Image (cartoon, rainbow, N blue to C red; front, side, top):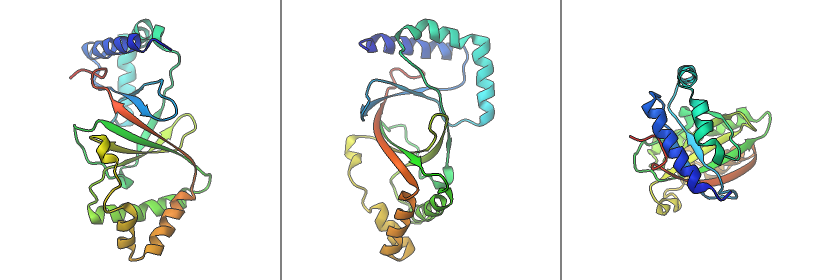
Length: 212
């Protein structure tokens, strides 16, 4: 606590060092701006195959990246956690853009034994989204490590994009299923597979991330 400026200076230098030392991963850093805990940072690298983890681990050992992190960033780090996530591209509606600034992340804890119902609901939702060419992007991923669960990420270029979608997801789902009651039943089917949820909005920090 009270050392955020020192941490940011250290992580910025470490990101630059990793690139100069030959790392091929690009790391993006995010900071929570809405949520119950604002005192941490997310350091994330995406769009990898599992075999890339082995390649990067070999680079890390050779370059002594862990030691470099501990020496430079460690003194300003209270704790660190490490997780993987696996994208569900089949059920996502991701639209690539370099202009995203904010990311709304909904972390969902799932009920045991409900994956079949959840997948069935997601299949219907994704068909509706694809058929409508719904212009609101989101990604779904499955968390590996910790308590697991699902993350639904909605990127935004500004806070203005937090306004309600028009048409709404429910509206296009009802159109796809030709029934408002069927749409409500599908959303209930999905929601009944969820035990708990928590929403956090992050801002990306390109000034701290891997330099271009």
